[in-house]
Image (cartoon, rainbow, N blue to C red; front, side):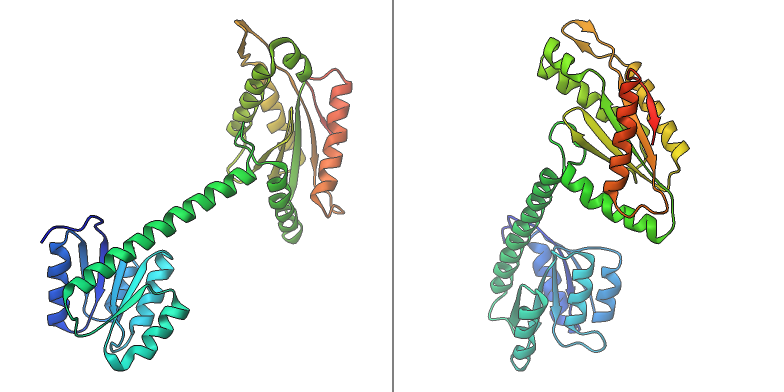
Length: 306
């Protein structure tokens, strides 16, 4: 018998030993990787340690029935396709499972022929592949909607959405929080003299340096053409000052090659920390913007608190 074009990892839960053996032999001959469990409890235990493309389960078993097996499979992998095996009197339950439990299909025992099972598994794998691809595209689209294309940092919409949650959590748990606003000094001159491509390179370099200095839990966003904002949970102002200073020194120490020459880039930063009366992200941003403006007025290449 020719192998299937789309091999799957399959779990069989069936308490009829002869039928279980027949299914294992047949599906293995098609090239599928097959595990088998003699009852629902064993199948659920197996699902705790592994995920399967397709789960084929008897509808009626002692102890944990087919619905319980399906719930366990979907908990491990929501895109796992479940096929029920059922006797004719059990069709009402099987149809209900299809409607309410996201099962793929059911097959009535005894099988008219095993090719019905083969075709059902092939269709289930087609649906799984499609659903996984749709999920991937959805994640990709969400990533595009939430990130800046040039730097990979969050965009303003995503930053405010995530940042407000972090502020609320900081207030709820009475934890410190700091915010750093960074701006490239004389950025318009860089664009004017060297071109916008050079300006993009400077912005990408600054984003890279910021990531090197920030923790995984910190939020980095491109706030404007030449500025970034960093939200630092569980961070006091002095520590945020240290982060801003390291970023300022790092960008100055790594002059990019622009137009065949090394160009020193400077940044200014405004730093603030959440105060007891602060109740919104916008309050922190406004205070950091004022501190950043003060740094600019001092000639740039400076970190100021506010």
